[in-house]
Amino acid sequence: MFRLSALIASLLAGLACFQTAHATVFSVDRDLEGLIVVGSITTDGTLGTLAPSNIDSWDLSLHYSSKGPVTLTTGNSTLGLVWDSAQ
Image 1 (cartoon, rainbow, N blue to C red):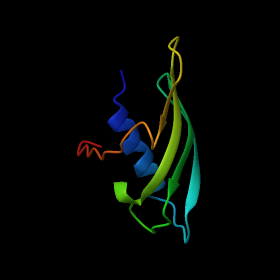
Image 2 (cartoon, rainbow, N blue to C red; image 1 turned 30 degrees about the vertical axis):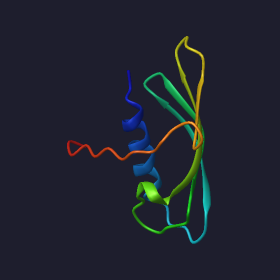
Image 3 (cartoon, rainbow, N blue to C red; image 1 turned 90 degrees about the vertical axis):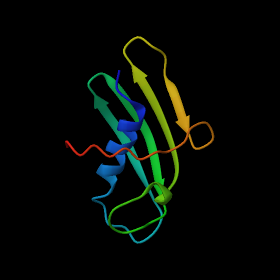
């Protein structure tokens, strides 16, 4: 199954291309080979490449095939950065 840490790293990489001047909420709606991720990620408005400390909050629902949804928030999960040099 798709590793959650790789998912978060992928989402961070996608957010890094956005330039913003103030706190911003990014909507997430992705299908990652059967793993559906829907929700939002809020940043502190940092410009350029984002680090885990730039993520203020998140609220993500994960749906995988017949299994019920799992909701991840800043209250019940943590953020880690995974670097895959092969990508």
